[in-house]
Image 1 (cartoon, rainbow, N blue to C red):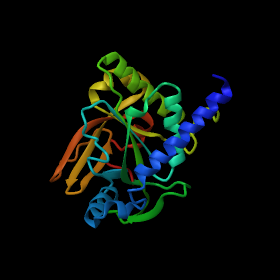
Image 2 (image 1 turned 45 degrees about the vertical axis):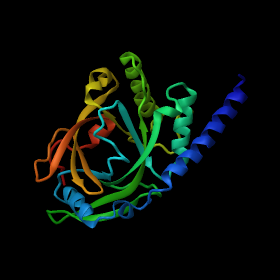
Image 3 (image 1 turned 90 degrees about the vertical axis):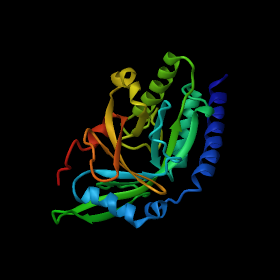
Length: 258
């Protein structure tokens, strides 16, 4: 196949995925508060930030973000509005033989974190901390690509998981060379992997083990990632999860410094 035919084929697949992703994501609100629909959940999440217990939190239903799955899974996210980004990511991975369309499903989650970025999609907010200071936060809704490659052969399955993780880490980041960078990537890509039994196979690509603390509500889970700390308050549960090293470094080990 000539280079021009390859380029046309890739562009056709990008357009195909754009339509598919838009269809899947259009059912979700793009506003953080509309997505959660529960002020009590937001209050409890905000309290984690106000009391320096976490640098941020997520909220999602288990259907939209099955982070407790024991099936080999990679979750990758970006702003839900960045349809072209997700489409280019999937089409390029498919074109390079890393995934097939059957490996992919879609979800979403709401997120609030410390700090702010000069991106048009999120909303900047201000919280008053338990110590009386101001904490700048950013809230948004993320689209989630859920990769669940299948194979009866463990070596093949591990290779697929590793190739997906390596692609995201090296190509879906602003630090990647322009010629191979997926457009509109974040500086710190967010990908999380289950189950933690894969750690022994992924440690060499700088995957770290973290803790997902979660609080169940009728319509979903409030989730706070920590490097090591476990929340012991009423109703809190925890599950180990694997994250990329850049995301791990953003997480707090114990109390967040004001």
